[in-house]
Length: 272
Image (cartoon, rainbow, N blue to C red; front, side, top):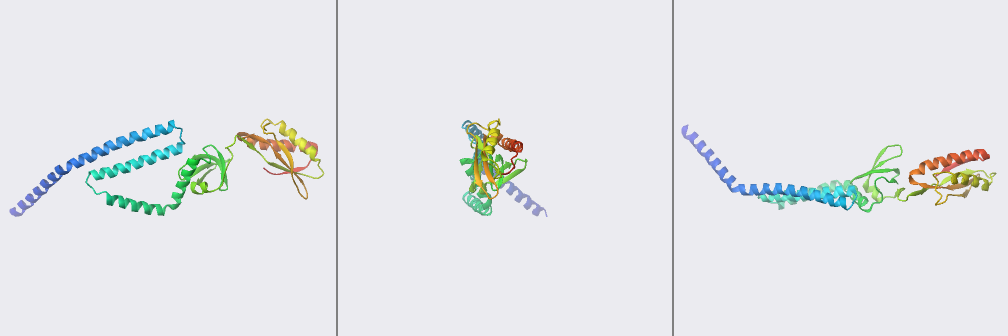
C-alpha cells in the first residue's frame, strides 16, 4: 500500500515538474502574444480616433463615416486576433479556412440582408437623398429621418415611422421633393361650360398674385388643361418654397373656392 502511494506521489511530482518546464518554455511566446494583444488594442483605438477625426474634417456623410470607421475597427481587430493566436503557436491557416467557409455559408443564408447592405452603401455613396429630404418611393412617402446600413427610416406627415429596405429602395424609382428649393403645385379645377373662362382665370390669378406664399418668380399660371364632355378643366400652377408647399396648396384652394362662390361659379377640384 505504501509503495502504491509513493508511486502516485512520484507520478504527480513528475507531472508538476513537466508542467513547470512546459510553462517556462512556453512563457516567452505567451508574454509576447499578450504584449502584441495589448499594444495592438491600444494602437487600434488610436487609429480609429484618428480616422474619425479625419472624416469629420473632410465633412463626410455621418452615416458613411460611422460605417467606414466601424468596418476598419473590426477588420483591425480580426487581424490582431490572427496575429495573437499565431504568436501563441497556433496554426492559423486552417483557422482562416474555417472562417472563410463559415463566412460563405453565412453569406448564402443572408442574401437578402447582403442586398440591403449593398443598397445602403449605394445610397450613402451616391446620395439620391439626404437626411431631412422628403421622398416618395415604394408607394410610401415621408421625411428621411435616418439612413442606416440595411434600412432607411422615413417619418410620414402623420408622424408614422416607416422602415424601407435599402435593397429595393436603391433599385427602384425615388422621387425627391427636396432637391430643388421651390416646388410647383398642379391644382386641377373642373368648371362648367357656361362659365366664362377668362373670368375664371382672372379670379384665380388674382388669388395667386395676392397670396404671400405663392412665389412671383417663377410666375404662377392658369391654363385650360382639358375639355371633357361635362367640364372645362383648369390647371392652376403656383410655385412656393418647399417648406410652404402644403400650406400654400390649402390656402389657394380655400381662397379660390370663396372667390368662385362670390362670382357664382360652380366648380370642383380634381387633384394636385
